[in-house]
Amino acid sequence: MFVRTVSDRDLDAVRRLLAESFHHTYDAIYGSDRVDSMLESRHSSELLRRRLDLPQSEFLVADDGTELAGVTFASTADDDKTVVLDLLHVRNSRQGEGVGTMLLVEAESCFPDADKVRLEIEEANTAAIRYCLGQGFAKVGEGLASAAPASEIKTVIFERPIIWAD
Image: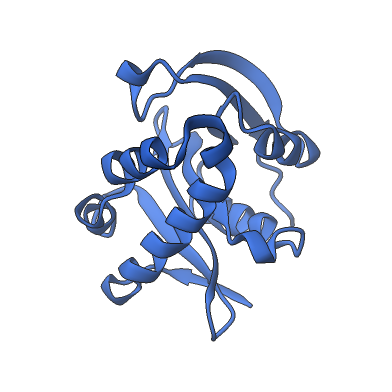
C-alpha cells in the first residue's frame, strides 16, 4: 500500500469510493436519496476535479495497486499553522488496516510549517468520532456542517497537535 497524489484519471474511482463510504455511513441516518444529494453537492466530479489544482492543499489516495483503499483532502488555515482535513474516507472493506492513519500522517507531512490538524465530523458519525479520539484528537467545538451550513447537520470539531518525528 502506498499513498500518492490524486490525478485526473483517479477521479471516477475516488467518487465511487466516496459513494460507497457515504452510503455505508449515512444511509441509516439520512436515507439513500439524501445521501445521493449530499454526494452531489459535496463531491461531484467537477468539485473533485477542482481540488486537483487548489493551492496550499493535498489530495491523496491510498493505493494497493489494485484498488483505492482510502482518500483524503487537506489544506492549510491560520497562516499555514493548521492542517484542515476536509476528507478522510477509507473503503469499508479496508477499515481497521491502518489506511486512515497512513493517509492522516502523509497529509500532515505535506505541511511542514503546521503545528496542528483539525477536522469536522458529523455528530451522527460515531465510528469516525471513535477513530479520531483513538488517534489523539480532542473535541474543540461544535457547529453546523461547514460543507453544507444550510442543511443544519450538527458537527463536532476535533484537533490534535502534529508531533514531528526526528
